[in-house]
Length: 240
Image (cartoon, rainbow, N blue to C red; front, side, top):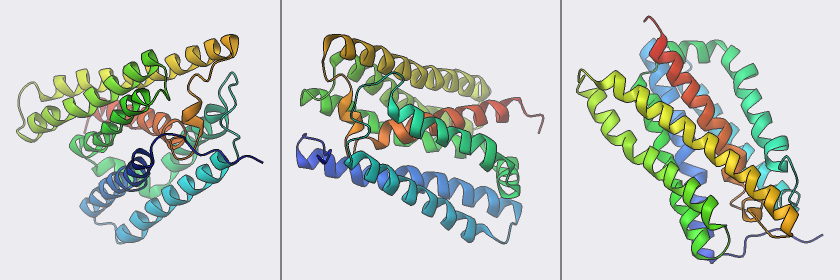
């Protein structure tokens, strides 16, 4: 069996792996911790550590599957979506949301806390790096990379105005959240279209996102990002 490791320069792969293994999970775990601490929950550190452990194990499992080459084959729908992204999203919606600790955390989490998690979307820079190495199609790389980087970039002034309690802060959050959600949906749509064209024309398409370590993007990011955006919408429409 051929091991499926990306062929881009090692420094890109290593920097990406370090970033993905640390930043997203840490941001989510810290936001959870802060929300539970605000509620007075005595199990703050236990739950925080469980969140970190879950993501570590998730990334390890995805790495093992990726190294087998399972995600590299161009199929419709893409295997990373069917066997990883959708199951992760359903896990969030069906299991996580029903946990008592999550309900408590959501009640006490701030909009700032939920938005700052999206700073990990600066990972979109790697779309451009992979395109520069001829590892991703131009259109997909630009749509995915630019959208994520802009979402992360605009999160900074959004957080600033929220903390300053500016009059238009909530309006800005609505606009930012809609933009961020449309971005991830456009990336998914573009990935499917690109895969369809790749199958038709016998081209690689977005196969690099099925190799290790870059498979962590499609398996983790879409489900997590969409779930977070939905939580922000819930928070915005909450009467509390």
